[in-house]
Length: 156
Image 1 (cartoon, rainbow, N blue to C red):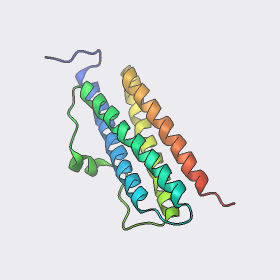
Image 2: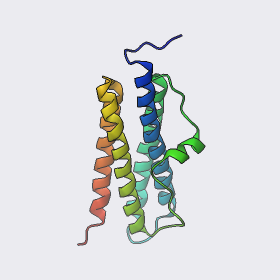
Image 3: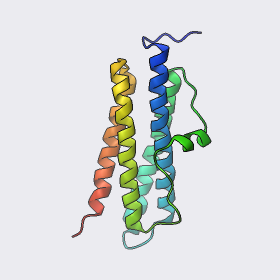
């Protein structure tokens, strides 16, 4: 049955393409954060271990919301190998020190924010309020998380 939600097919596909990039970045950031949770060491271990756990759980839930929106637009969600190819966030080599983990996650959250912001313009122009709402929430979460992580890097 043909999809008829008030957004033409071309615009739905363009929005879904942007959401797929957002999904790819979010998934890579999820994996990175979960890995850092496993491997963090040092004087901030307890704080970072718990913070990373909270963050990767939030990212995991976000993945489902983003993927479901792509499907609601009538587009299939690619598998991990395809997502890995289009993600702007790349994996870290080895096990970074705690401070490097924090810096990497700040950059990751900022990257997802920029990706989402680019898609927002397309969704807004197409009057796709559900996608715009989803992206607004994602940008809010990523900007706040980046700020909190950045605060850990301040010298006393």
